[in-house]
Length: 427
Ligand code: SDX
Image 1 (cartoon, rainbow, N blue to C red):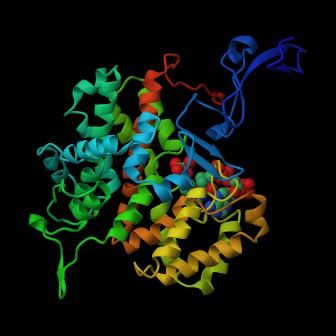
Image 2 (image 1 turned 90 degrees about the vertical axis):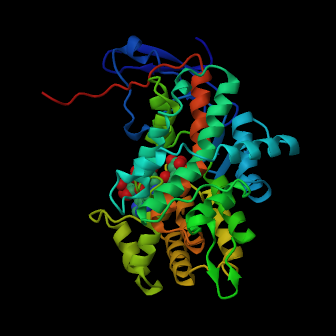
Image 3 (image 1 turned 135 degrees about the horizontal axis):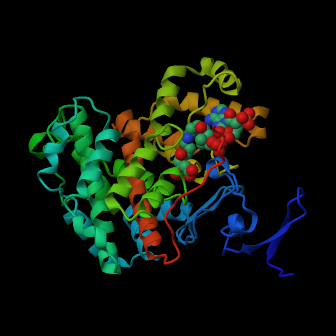
């Protein structure tokens, strides 16, 4: 009897099956069930993949019980508080933080790649005024594949790096175009004199010709504290192992489709309010609750099994403790509330929800804690970013994670097309 195995007995027939256990460098081991069907003639069943690993990966590690998140082994708190988003992008793509020279070159390359082909602008004219930016962003990202068709055949590191840097650099520009189209404003091209995060705020806010808003006491320039806040938000969203949108990107990668349509599929999956779309829903929910006095009523609705109302920004498939990203954002909220004039009413409502939920048996027994989406919206609102752009901000941060996961998938010679089976219940 081998040791690193599990043995399973079919109690209907007495047949016994032996399956290998595979150990990772951190976290739970896995039972390799790839031979399960050939051994047993049965499939395994796992609605929502609550207990199923779909790949081996070296990028991101989450310990849901401890509330721990690491990118390439480095804890998220260290990266969010002491490094920039571009350093985090470099770390995810290259498995190490950049030195000064590497960071400068990476930054300059992203600045120069932030421009998009002029004809991409015309695509947006096809969309109705007021189109949700997530729909136009997903479409425009798929359209980007038509400008870089050669990326279909990448098979070497330099090609992967170029393809990844290109999409990371262009995502803020395309997201800003999506926003400007949704409000009927002319598009603002990226300004390569501005840093990654500052440039995004600039493309959202500037007037035609690139002039920033001029107030009674001169030009409203973009404050450093705003840039740092947004940069931290991008870092916190950079990757999150095999969440629904990343699993979607890997699924599209498994068929051999273009990397940018895989990213577009990830954007579409992220849009759902159960996933990245929750950040937009959280603010809408806080505004709907309206005052601290109404919180109890909505908590009761969230607990009512017959009411589909759920507390947006609460709960997580993996975190059964505080989402470490939510902790960083909560700290950022406290730090910024005076300097950025955060909406104190929304903050009070959010804090009241958290205070009640964390003492309530319903949430405690289900290990429901605030997740990253619970706190991001108040800060984004203070940065002048409208609700409709919250999930596009999530997209900008997560693009590096998606493309890094896509590259890891492509480099893995053991991968197969993602094709699950089913339990047939029909005629
Ligand atoms: C993200 O996966 C990732 O890593 C995602 C993400 C990333 O970085 O990529 O972290 C980003 O998507 C964060 C999650 C954002 N979504 C929301 O905030 C939406 C609200 N949360 C829920 O819809 C829910 O918690 C999920 C979708 C996040 C997780 O769902 P699960 O793991 O499938 O859990 P479940 O639906 O089976 O819920 C378990 C129980 C149920 O009660 P019972 O049937 O056992 O009685 O908890 C309840 C649920 O009803 N529950 C909630 C709740 N979330 C779960 N009840 C009230 N409010 C909630 N928010």
